Length: 204
Image (cartoon, rainbow, N blue to C red; front, side):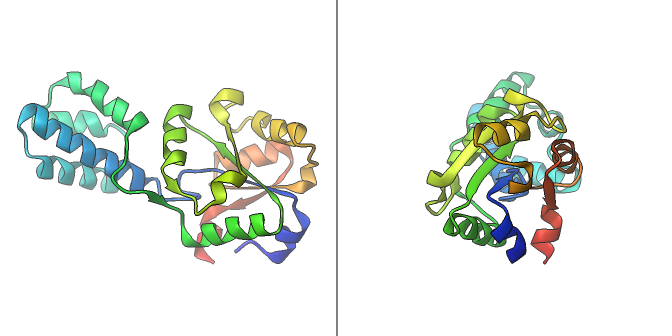
């Protein structure tokens, strides 16, 4: 986990969202379930078979082109792309999204020590906000300030982190960014702030 040194020295902690605070598949698999149910109602196709196909494709290849592959497999009219996209963005999930236990403990420690807590989130802001609203925050939501990279500067641009520093009167050494390897690390490097990779935290 994050060392006591960081928890004492840093004044603010910035987190990415997907696969950092919670597993993104927990959102997507519920979207697939809702879409399969919708198609069963609209086209009299078997929702269970559609869902199984979408789950297997996701686990094998990730979420890219899931609709196109599912439509081809089950001869689903392409007009339903709109419905799928709307579900991705605005779905009301059957189940709350749960934060990784280790990350929940860390968030609680950060708040308990009176430190500032930020989300700096990549992706479509409407969809990401929909996810944020359906996460079980255990009361932490009142301590969160959210910034969307798409509205400031896409990663690895330092613009979002620079805005957080400026707007909240923080120094570079005050901030720690916890995210994924790749763009998040580059973003932190470009802003000259410390970075911790989620893979390391979840494995510890």
